[in-house]
Length: 94
Length: 188
Image 1 (spheres, rainbow over the protein chains, first blue to last red):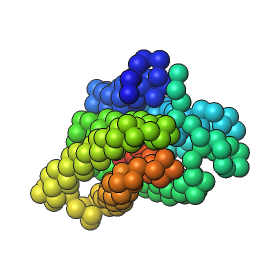
Image 2: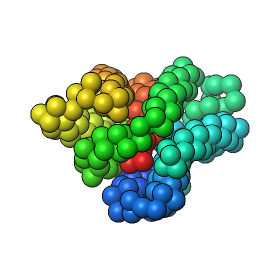
Image 3: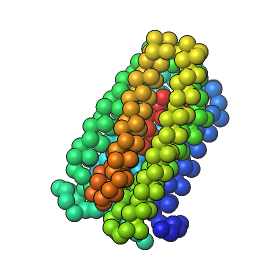
Image 4: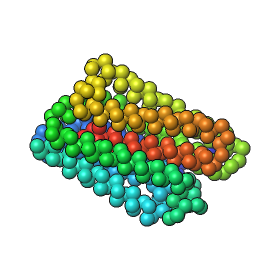
């Protein structure tokens, strides 16, 4: 079994590793104030989570070739990420 | 370019087992709802939630995320290899599933260290509502990891393509739940 960069599974794994590392780094390095900086960091962290979920669905679970299901899952997870961000931002503002 | 895709059976062309997709949607709905409730409760005490979250090991959880997605990678490669159906492929499938299981064990080991540390510092279920959700959600997820490891181990005995694919789907669901749980509990 040979693996190469042209393999979508390899690219998916590398992207998941990079996004996980980046999200952790953003959380650890983010400034405590002002509040908008925390909200911006939260948006980046949730955006990365949405991307990771899409990669797992599209490449590990094979939805890349099922456009309707891919869009439905993407929208559902996007709705979750937006709702989470709004709740997080409200907490930051309070 | 090789793809691990099977669009033979299900309505809408969903790859793999339809029942696994029902399970994936159900698990995402349950964990997603619980995480949104967690964030709603955070509104009443953002300071307390932030201080509680600061007690967790973000870096360790980040490393664990990389361990779990790497385990998912091994399971995805196993599912793809199983489709070829050759004797050599079967051996590769078993090795790849073993790698996935071992990485699942590493994930649980790191979680165990994290739990032991939290317990030693008195951060139990009742320390704060943050920790009530932390323990319930992460333990529920860890139970899925244990179940997934058992399923992968059983499936690796015969390494039949359909069973390997279904078990890999379950394992990816465990991945998927973790990638939405991790940022909300540990990072936000």
